Image (cartoon, rainbow, N blue to C red):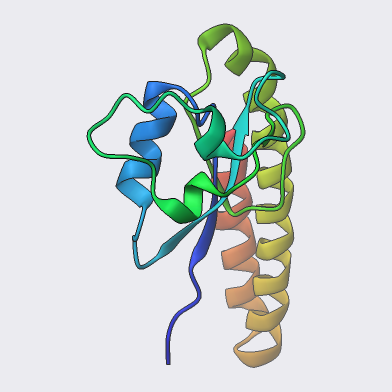
Length: 139
């Protein structure tokens, strides 16, 4: 049975760092490039029509066809990799982090309920405490 690929957003996909993320993730068996974000001048346009590709080769065809999304509105992905310029990142990245943290907290609660139902209450509480401690340290 094939495992499900993890959806990834690349923030600032048109810059050199974003292009490198694309190059590294293209064809990766465990990850799927699910969203590309960019500046106002690139939003709503196919990536391949607007990017000035600075790396060897060309953008992968499946990525070139993707439409660039705005960076300021978090999308439904499991992971976001940021190649945003520092000034933009300071404003945008905390919103993405908060949305991903909320989803992680919901996943922790679901796991807690599953452990409580299938194993026992004490182990479920240990799991919940450890997970919430990790979440609080993350941020």
